[in-house]
Length: 608
Image (cartoon, rainbow, N blue to C red; front, top):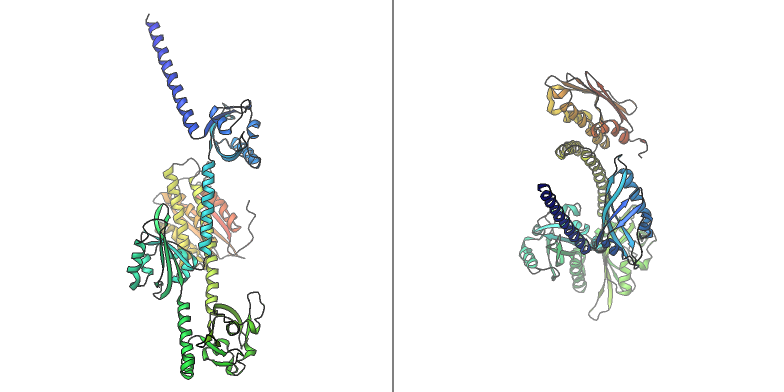
């Protein structure tokens, strides 16, 4: 009787669990349907595929069409993605890892959709792939949204980066973005140097209250301020007269203000200068001549329509290095050699002053490469305008010339410096990425991995500090070694000739020495009070440096059973980066390591 009661109770319990399981399955099915998702199972050996009804709905399969094999499934994959899916599945099976792919399908109704495929790989008793169970989710909306956002961001960045105006964005009172033109206007080395700057420090003090009011007027995205003029303050303290507009935008979901600045200093100066020249021509030519002789810019005035010379100043003669001939009736025409960007020479009628006389054209900031009277070349910025009488008739033309040769040379140097900086940053990021990948790999704990990564990153930073202190000209090998062993005082014996390491050798050798010192401190001679390390090297022969690391007085040494990242770095880094090598010896008396590297750039073995 008691056995029957127990059986009945067990039966009721099983029925309850089955009902609960079915309810959970129904809930899961409803959730998957709501997310345009479905589940599948693929039995690999039998090549048998099983889909739930939700997945059939995702693929919009018509009644009667079944997916029973992997080939049936691949037939629904977009032809352009099919090979990638096959390769991805094969790679997952070979690596014994789960599936994680995104690809396009062609549904039964002809629609093309994006799916995310996530599958758990099940292994049999022999560790061979047996089956894959997982789910497919329709992610078309997300992919399209990401594509639209990426295209929009790219269009915005392209417009801003190529805009002739200075543009920056500020949020919470600080600059969060700037284009190269903003950096140039405000006297920064590059756009990144402006990021983080207090925005109101970039405004002349007498205009800061106005700037704050304009920020307050745009409390919501899409609102704009009308153009106005004020002074901005460069990083060197000088001010620039600008015309500015601003608008509220969102940055990372929060309100920010985008500001566009246009330098109107030249325009204002040109307008004032032209008015002054016209008044002086009408009133007192001699007085004008005296003023022009003391101007920092070169000035030339010719009559209309024939082009006879009225006057030219000393600064113009200095710019052209033309000598007295420039003041003659022909204005030194034999010296006026200018060239278009494509190398074609300027014809007489193409010069800005002659265009102003002939057509009334006003020319602002036209840059021309010139051949000076002494045979040297330079670059000038030319502003030219017609002079009219009270009836609007052209009576003369005036040109103002600035020598911008030095500025062009500075800009070229800046471009070279930026290219070098980009190269160094990319190299450093590649090293950090490799350190992170290797430090976090394997079966070590997260804390151990973090400590290893931090210590290696600190070693890399120490090498960079030495390089920075040397102006990236090179680091003394003894300084590098002492820096790594500084904490061990007299227990570290360092001997060697003075050797200057190139930057690449500094980074690589710094990491290798760090790994040797870390291993010695954990397991070797530096892990006990009486242990010591000797590092010695001789003067390089034929550009090849040989360095020896020797540990003594530590615990008995055993050859490690596994090859971790540190040992891999020691044995391979010098060969990979510098065409050298390393030999590690695990003698019972102590670890020794012999390092070889080339101190000058050489062809290293192919990296593959």
